[in-house]
Amino acid sequence: PADFNGTWNLVRSENFEGYMLALGIDFATRMIAKMLKPQKVVKQEGDSFTISTTSTFRNYFVQFTIGEEFEEDNKGLDNRKCKSVVTWDNDKLVCVQTGEKKNRGWTHWIEGDELYLELRCEGEVSTQVFKRA
Ligand code: RET
Image (cartoon, rainbow, N blue to C red):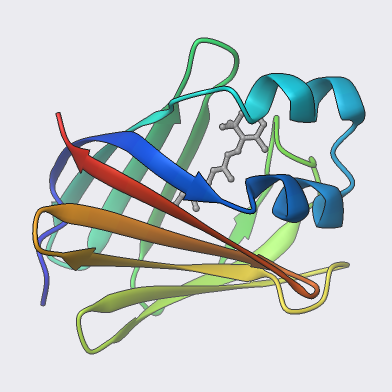
């Protein structure tokens, strides 16, 4: 499978505002969050991952093993708990986050030297693109 290991910096993003609105993130947080250029550090060992997203404002950390359902607290995002599971779809990492919000999840993949993250919630889709630091 693909190798996501490394440190990645956000270079562009589409419809993050729509995604945050779908999650019910308040106005003040959205105003700050849309200006951020978060950094991702991915540590991948076989099928075990830790992904930390850091920014000057707030951080988010998630740890998972492919195919093993885990409780996700989304602390600092919308704080809703989900049952999450990540699987491989060819070279893409696909997460389904089952909870109060419909159609919630994300997909990570690599294209050339860029890391893509598609974030989904209800009818909204946001795409974030990162480059190696
Ligand atoms: C920030 C800033 C505060 C507001 C919001 C944020 C969103 C973070 C997200 C992180 C997604 C992480 C994933 C990790 C797994 O690969 C930047 C913390 C809303 C959406 C999908």
